[in-house]
Length: 217
Image (tube, rainbow, N blue to C red; front, side, top):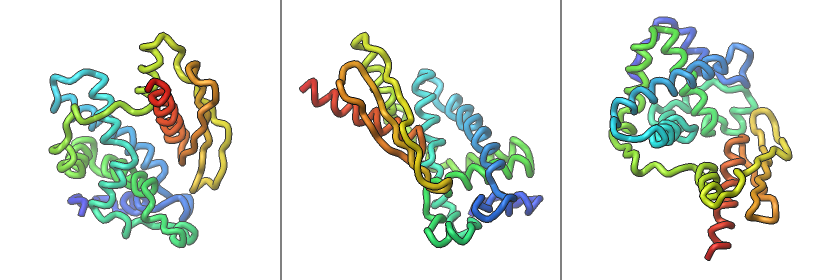
């Protein structure tokens, strides 16, 4: 399904092994794959869209390397049935979770790079993203909630938002972050939750924008 033959099968085995199964897991490969993916996608869209601005390229890259997109690619290549999980994650259906699918795709990218170098890895990423790159339009990529909120406030000569993690709960496999967002135009703190700090901040910014838009009506 991934149209790649590993020379070192141990790299493939490690890339498919979740941390819940032991120490020889895919976390380090995930770290490597994340960095390579960001670089390769940045180069591809730089060449593909020669007339778009740096800000548009940044948003375009973010839309292509975000967890939801990687999880979608993981499902495209039927990755869920190949991931090796510990008993707890198996019981809770971890193979369906976006975060696990996304991390495993990144680990595969890291493994391909170590197995055969950057050119093969670039071709591998292109094969994974072929359909997604054919159908993407920079004009369709909207700014994320945090960017929208910051620009809204700056256009009104207000200070930028202040985000603060007020609580971390859950397990290492299922974390939950509670984040507050403070802005001068609203009296009360905005509080939101997410499975990562970034997601919680985006959720808080989205709530703030909704309140500000309602206030202006």
